[in-house]
Each structure stands twice: as structure tokens, then as C-alpha cells.
Image (tube, rainbow, N blue to C red; front, top):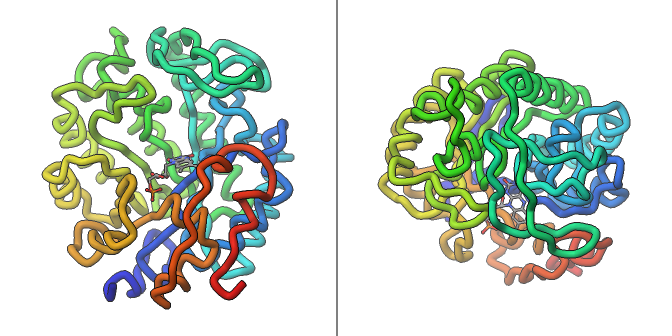
Length: 354
Ligand SMILES: Cc1cc2nc3c(=O)[nH]c(=O)nc-3n(C[C@H](O)[C@H](O)[C@H](O)COP(=O)(O)O)c2cc1C
């Protein structure tokens, strides 16, 4: 590990090294969508990650999918995030808020307004999700009207402005993992007959509109975008045979906006990843799902990625950077405390000197 400890500039940020904290939902926010009491401690404990990308945060009531996920669309939430971001800044790290609109990956019982979820088309994902009553089948969503699509784009910009108001260094648009934006991308969740469905150009339109509007509102150099090309085999998303062609169109179009970064949650198509590297002139973040510890730096050393966001290892190790630099043993993540609960598995992982 050599190159991984070199500095780099991403958007407006001068980062101390090439690792970052990947966005991770922890379901510990208050019911009003303000970050929970321990969020400032949790994130600031991990400040040596340099860049912290927050848990998925809904830009509107409609955008909420999971119980106890935070929002960033009203004054109380801005105030709550301000405390978190101030604590992170005080420890010298940068913070991006991930804007996640869950779309159909939601349940009326999980949202403040208890309404039917929205999506490009009225197709249930065919999977279950956690609710107050335990695991339940996700019901069929309703299709957004064109007017509502426009409003949803505005919700993203409103939330991005709110995030900056809370002190965030930028926002990451969640275009991955089967949530609203990828629901527009995928052929099996988007059956629209209007300009937002059908051809690759049409299915890409909503994501590009969101990126464009957010970049205009807060600055392209404060805007990142996450994608997860390929068949996820969960969340009911199937991008189909032309998945690679979709990203061969989408990535260069997105590149025209000159965003701070593109974040790829990489699932397996190495050839496509290489192509994305070539198509994307700005900073590329690559998060490899389930990567073993000894492979953490591989993409940086190989020049495939500029930054490697780390998920589970950074939950389990508040001092991940120091441990890696010292060659120390890492704590294993306790998966039973990933979602919901209190300080256990959140702020109580020991550092190596404890
Ligand atoms: C508990 C948990 C919550 C997650 N929540 C999100 C999320 O809110 N947004 C997102 O884009 N990815 C989310 N992910 C995916 C991670 O960002 C990352 O892509 C994944 O964990 C693979 O990286 P890792 O092997 O380093 O953990 C989550 C992962 C975990 C483990």
C-alpha cells in the first residue's frame, strides 16, 4: 500500500489519502428524520477516513424507504445535520450527504405521510422490507406523473441546497442499488411510454436531470453521483442485456456536467469498469462489494480508481486508517447491529489503543 496514502483533490476537497467512508444506512435517526443523538459521535469518530459519505438521506417525505433514515428537507433536519457536520469538520474531515430517494423500495408504514410509494412504473419489486410490524412484502407503487417527476427533481435540488446550508461539503446523488434513479434506468422497473421510458436516452433522462439541476444549484464541484452497473440480483432490479450499453451512454453524458466525482459500486464487470475509467475524466471512486482486506488498495495501485470508499470495515473500525497504516488487526463488523438500535455496534467499536 503506497499510492493509497497519497493526497488527491476531489471537487473542492483536498483529501489526505485515497480511502473514504462509503455511504451506509444505520437506521438510527429520530422519527422526524433528524439525525439521531449519536450520529455526530459516530461520524466524527471516523474522521480519519478523510471523506465521509453519509448514510442515504431522503430528499422528501416520498423519498423515504426505510424506518429511521434521516431526511434533509426541513429546518429541523438541517439543524440536526449541522451538529453532525460541525463535529466531523472539527476533526478535520469532509462530509458529503448522500441523497437517496428510495422510490418503490418503500412501505407506506415507513413514511411520515403513510402514502403509497412512487416509482417510474407501477411494479412492485417483489421483495420484502423491514417495517414496524417486521418483514413485509413491498406493495405496488404508483407511477409518477410528468409533473411529479419535475417536482422530484426540485426535491433533490432543495435537499442539496439544504445540505450545503447544514455545512455539507457536497452531496452524492444515489443512482445505484435499486432506488428511484436506478428504477428509471432499469428495463424491468421502467415501462413508461413517455420521454422517461423506452430507449436508453429516455431511461437516463431522470438521473441526468437530477444531476444537472443539483450541479446548477450547489456547484458541479460539490456534486457526486453513485451508480451500480449490472445485475444486482436484489431489490428486484434487472438492467437487462444492454446494461453495459446504458452506462456507455450515461457516463459520458454525466461527464459533460463536470461533477466532482463518479462513484461506482462495482459488482463484477471488469471490462465495463475499465471503460468507465476511460469515459470519466474527473475523479472516480470505486467501491468493491465484499472486498477482502488485502484487496483494499488494489484499484488505487492499478489506477482503476482515484479513491476507494470502504463500507463495513469502516463501521467496525473507527480508526481504520490508523490500523491499516500500522498493519494492525481489524475488528470484524457485527452485522446484527447494522440497522437500528443504539450505541451497540455504532459508537462502541474499540480503537486499537483501547
Ligand atoms: C449497513 C450498510 C448500509 C448501507 N447503506 C447504504 C446506503 O445508504 N447507500 C448506499 O449507496 N450504499 C449503502 N450500502 C452499501 C455500501 O456503501 C457499500 O457499497 C457496500 O457495503 C460494499 O462495500 P464494503 O464491502 O466495503 O462494505 C450499505 C452497506 C451496509 C453494510
